[in-house]
View: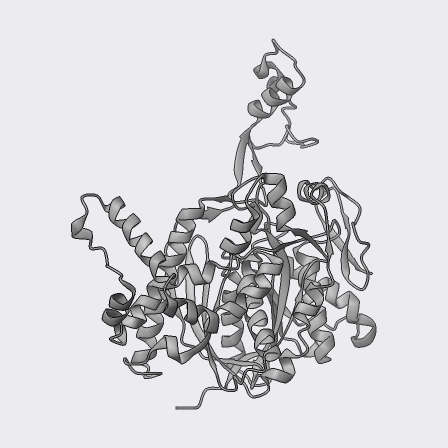
Length: 502
């Protein structure tokens, strides 16, 4: 058989908004205990997009940073695939806005057609869409050693004000160049998948009856004794649409950037999917003799890179797989004995709900053992650092965890040449992907140009009132005027969006 071309991530760049809200400020406003948010979840700062920013500008800024520092010729970039759940249109890909911005930025140097033959598309599956874009592009790159693609993830994790998800918010973008013989990571094609259709988190098209809207307006205007049906009868009966209520559809569809979600159920789905993906990954790897049945992945993987909806989520959710690897290595009995752990059995409970609660508490008790804490310090902790300073980035979170890990290891002068990293992506709805990558000998010279923590330390804190105005969309002018970045120029009445580079 022909030897497969090694492909992977050659370089990475990121963009984070210049504004952040200190979690302590939000805690005071919401009467929450900051210690629980900080020490319990790992939250410190929440990145907030300015008035001139959206998913497209953040993606374009990250892509431009990647192109500039690698002096890439846009004419050689065969595709730009975007993973996002913050799409700006129901049909027109956000990636086309990114492409237009990049073309306008580089046209003087490379010509107006410099991106004419570049394939672009959005991939959406909640927070795992960026992993999907990466895997798709890796397969494409394996087909020709000369191919160069860019994968971008860009999102604003926005929740309703005062909701239980509000304090996990964040925003930003990560761009990656994908090619053969990469300088940073080689990613093999063994991918474990766990998928199940659920409603743990989603952004539906919500319906509103015209009569509901009229009734609410009349109530707010303190107008009584009005027959709503008579108002509806006054709507034009022709097919021409000149307003909002005379839309031809009987009901109006409303889209909101904020999700419908159930936090505890989503955590359960996350844990179940990554366990399924992990087992699937092991099964494929063993069948292909990638490693044998005795391989201990806790030892094989020097670092673990998770999708992090909040900084400490990975270490909270991994205990079941930790247990599985201990059992496989015949270390489980001694581990439970040393730590006084008693595994609950379903037959000992009259109701399944009681067993599930006991089992969840048991898994939580694993995370409190000295062995598990040492495992977290070595394998997971460095990924948490970037997340703590930005918040949830949805599709970007797993790649920010990777950048955070690499830059932290570089700073600490850790020798990781040839190290294998394990990855766990997750997207609500729900799907997980488990895969691994090998760190290349040139990883240090690539990583030293990330500038991650230096950039994050230069951002500007905002007060609560400014945050709420930006969240509500009330503030139209920028808190910090854009400079050396892409910005929204105009959104016209039809919803078409236009951008500029400042």
